[in-house]
Structure formats: structure tokens, C-alpha cells
Length: 312
Image (cartoon, rainbow, N blue to C red; front, side, top):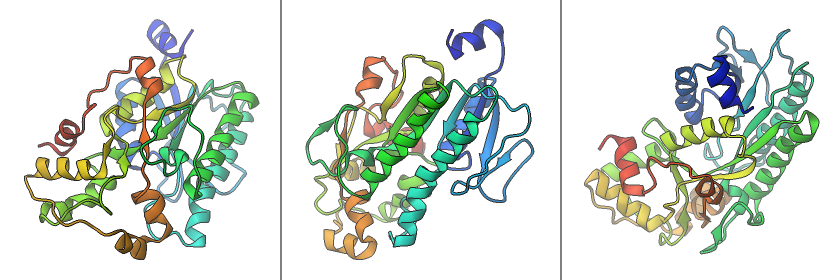
């Protein structure tokens, strides 16, 4: 019996543990889980611990759950912001350890529960594929090269331990650029595009794989409920575009021109290695598993997706 059958037939609320609940994705997901009747427990990193939350440090071991804690599923979204600043040695360590060490510590703590969760949904990223030019990248594609790719490979490896450690069904969601009106990359772009000074990055030929926030929330819920979903899943829309096409679509939605291209050297001077791997990498990702499972995208094409999330 799937978790979805359990919820519908017995009327029992699903008990779901969520990490990263205060982030962009978590803030959109938690209200949906509550609307579905789930009982949600948040693992909270930092001091903003509310009633019913469990505090934890992603880079430290020793995580312990309250006596009697039981979870049907885990949705693991926690990770240091990749785009928060230049990748110094310290930033790289924070980015990697928050994902790799954090996941290792979480899986170890869950394995100590008397009744571990049967589903473990862990975020990963399309950075797994690296810079691949025009190549179409389904889930079966080999990992690429670079810091982000190496981090994603190690991150997924730690999450996959749950399948053997306590028999969980593991879903590894490789996440593209999230389009949201509440934050993230799109909100950082808006001020300059609204002035009419936006433009393509370094010629704009690199591919961008994106997903609208409402579709991503639906993917997360489906990852918990659908027993066929396991292993890597590309959490992206089927409508990948080049950076130039993305720029043109956003300008069209905002009703502003976008004629100020940003040279490659400016991005590299400003952001260093992050520019090459996060801004200039070409990653043309194909949502093969979602297509096979007949996932119903609400926003499969870019311009309507932008209009939906921006209310335009």
C-alpha cells in the first residue's frame, strides 16, 4: 500500500519531516502539506526554532529526535545558498558540508529511530551535469566536472544510503532554476530588468533549465505519494531555453527592453568560479522520468510561467 493509499483509505495524516522549511522552496511547500492534511515537523538550523520544531546543525553529528518521534516520509531541502557570494574556500566548504555532511548526519539519525521513514526525498541539483553545451541530459546522463557536479554526486550518494540503511524509497530531485515571485534568482533579476537595463549573459547561448515554483511543489508531493518514483528525477520543466531566450521572455512579460548584454569577463571578475558553474554553464536538462510518469505540468512553457509567478 502506498502512502497515498494509506492516507486516503484510513484517513491517517501523513507524518512528514521537512528540512530547509524556511527557504524559498520550503516556504511554498509547507502550506501545501498542511492543506493536504499532513502532520509536519520541521528540522530547523539556527535559532528560529518554533513549537514542534527540532533544532539541528547540518554540519554537526549528534542529531536526536524526541522520544516516540515517527515519520512516514522525509523531504530534505536544506543546503547553504550557492549564489550567496564569491566561492572562497570557506564558502565552498559551507556549500558542500551543508549538503554532504548534513545529509549523512540526517540519515544516521533517522536510522536510529525505532520505525524509520519509508520514503526519503532529497533535493539535488542540475549542477550534477556540469557545463554540457547543447547535449540533452536525461536522468541517465553521466555527471559532469567541477565543484557543483562533484558536490551533487557526493550529496546524492549520502542520500542513497537511506535505501540500504533502513529500506527507504529514495527520490533524488535534481533541481533547476526555480521561478518564484517570492524570492530566488528571478527576484534578483527583476530590479535591473525593470529599469530596461537587462540583457543576456555572455552572449546568451547557454541553456537554462527551469521550473515554476507551483510545479515544483506538486513534484515534491508526488515524490512522497507515488511509489514508482525512485532514484534521480530531473525537477525541471520540459521547456528549457537559452539564456538569450529567457532574457527576451522576461523583458516581454515586464514590457521593458533588454539590450544590455553582460560580458563574460565582467561576470568572472565579479563572481569568479561561481560565474562559470552557476551563471554561464549550459545545462539542457530533460525531465524524462516526469514525462514517463505523466506528470501534469501547470506551467510547461516559459513566458506563461513567468506571467503566472509574477502575476502579470
